[in-house]
Image (cartoon, rainbow, N blue to C red; front, side, top):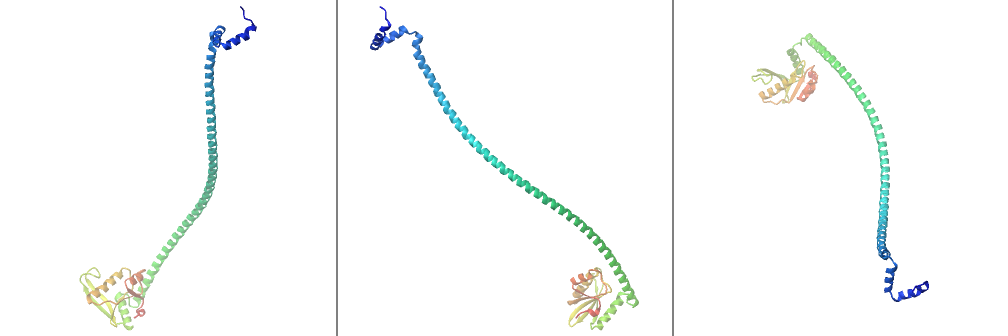
Length: 280
């Protein structure tokens, strides 16, 4: 018995009533590869699903990577912007520093120029001072020669009037003092220990006692700086031997070396050129 196309609806209806016939019919109609295809399709669907899942995860990772990259890019762009601003400020600061350095160099140049002029002025001043010192030296030499000439003339003048010797001049001055109202006493004692002249010798001191006050008077034609300490030792020797305190020290001389007047005053001596100048 053969089955035609018209019998197909009846066959499908029977297959609906008997589902177990479907497997038997499928086994007859389909080959083994076709029967396994649904399983392969399911396995392929699983692989595709995994691929799609992996793709989805990749897309998500890519999106996250893009977001992170964009975030980092924005941060880098901000950092670059700040760096650019800092570079601009640094350039401005450097420009101001260069400007200040330029002004400072100009000021240093002016200062160097002024220092150079000052050094030249100091050199000229030193030269002028050297010339002044040289002139002062020559002037001092002239003064010394003049003093020597004056001293020689004084000596000549003293010799003319019979006063060449120290003793004669002192006697003359003593007479003038007595005429001026001063009573002059020649005090003499022997210095056995050499306190005055550093060797044993007689010590003579001209003493004036007036109104109970003791005055020591030194009468000299000229006085050097070296004579002052000896005069002072004579006063102390007199005070030690007599027990009297000397109230005034009077030096009468027409001529003395430079600086004698200042040293004499420091030692307490009153300096006079003539006996008449002595103040009571």
